[in-house]
Amino acid sequence: MARTPEGRRVKSVVLGGLQDLATGIELDEVAMSYQFLDDVRIIGLEISCVAEPDDAASNSDGRLHLYAEVSRSSLRGRPGSLGIAYTFAVWNALIAMGSFTEHLVAMFPEGYGIDIDEGEHVNLLAYAHYTGGAGPIKVYENAVLYYVER
Picture 1 (cartoon, rainbow, N blue to C red):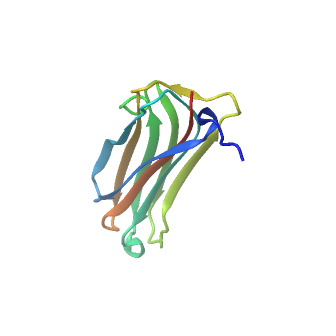
Picture 2 (tube, rainbow, N blue to C red; picture 1 turned 90 degrees about the horizontal axis):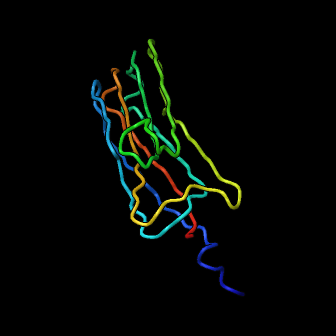
């Protein structure tokens, strides 16, 4: 069987992280940065953000903002954004909570994509703000970029 030419092989890179976030603390950071060593075309991406309360059964009220963005910029919401996953929740009763989650999946048709030049960075930007009685929460922001060399 003939080997698929290098420029037609789909490759991937995973960006992500996990943080414990105490109530009342705001997280706003570049969670991870990746520098491409070749000229590539991003043909698809997946972004997810997940928050899991440690003590969900005792959480009587709270608020959560959770945001993950893949961008060429190092600042949220600026030109160069490739995709955003965002969720917001407010609750005011004792509830047994599961996890809060939001996902974005985008794939481009053949021949289309986002060109990234050699040496250019792509960043995973993370934002989370939580207030509530459940103690700390675990916050995951992850992205998978699918690309081909050009």
